[in-house]
Length: 171
Image 1 (cartoon, rainbow, N blue to C red):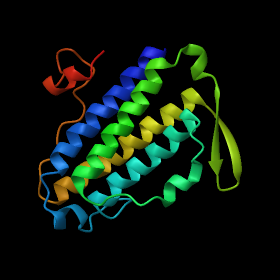
Image 2 (tube, rainbow, N blue to C red):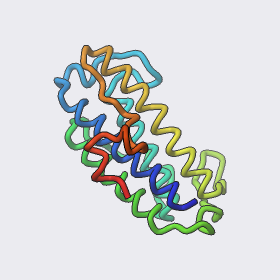
Image 3 (spheres, rainbow, N blue to C red):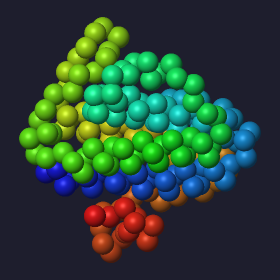
């Protein structure tokens, strides 16, 4: 089971890298322009993904930063945000690579608005993956809205369908 989580986190890392490659082709105005979606621009959508990732990774690593992560200043240029996302993805991959089946059942303390809440590690990881997929889909639409062809993001798992760029992430 732990290997499945590792594959999921590596899929997310590849998907993020693939999406960021496309996003970095946007000019600054297109990156920050108002677009349809939960977050009103490509920049804000992908910054939201990063910020939530960092929050949950901090909880998984027991980093102690908690909700203070949401008040940090993040860079606004695509290259810096892409680097921060890649670093976060590798932290999460390292965490998933080290976790065993029993670790998936351990509890994670999360600093919430109404106090500390405990979540099961495996459930938190599934939520985090789903959150990334959800918002990458929105960024995909926003890229189309900006007049750019969004990248294919579902060619990771199947051998016959795997994108060549996914091979570097495959374990």
